[in-house]
Image 1 (cartoon, rainbow, N blue to C red):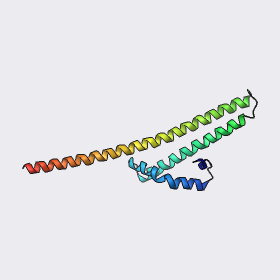
Image 2 (cartoon, helix red, strand yellow; image 1 turned 30 degrees about the horizontal axis):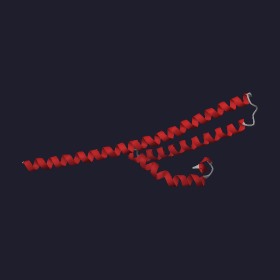
Image 3 (cartoon, one colour; image 1 turned 135 degrees about the horizontal axis):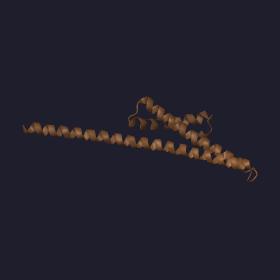
Image 4 (cartoon, helix red, strand yellow; image 1 turned 30 degrees about the vertical axis):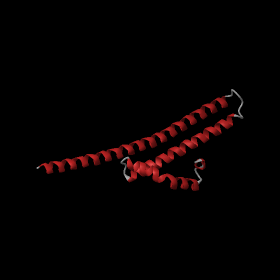
Length: 136
């Protein structure tokens, strides 16, 4: 994952995609999304994670620049505020990506439970019909 911080590292992105795309895609499909919607959800989850990592990296660079600035100067106060805002946005993006993943898993589980309940209801209906036919 640390290699994904470099947007230009195509090999790392390809490896990540090849490793995780099926998992993300299958969770999206199990929630009832179409193929196109599942692909879009997968792409969005990867983009949000990458953006959050990039923002955290930017915040770290700003904090490193702060170490060379004079204490109490306008430059240091502005940089500290910028770093705080970038970091807060990154944490929000990370939380959003995690929320999307958790919600997708919940929806997939709910869908599976509904399918199981429907199959069970169908079995009960068939068994009841056979019982009623046998009674006549």
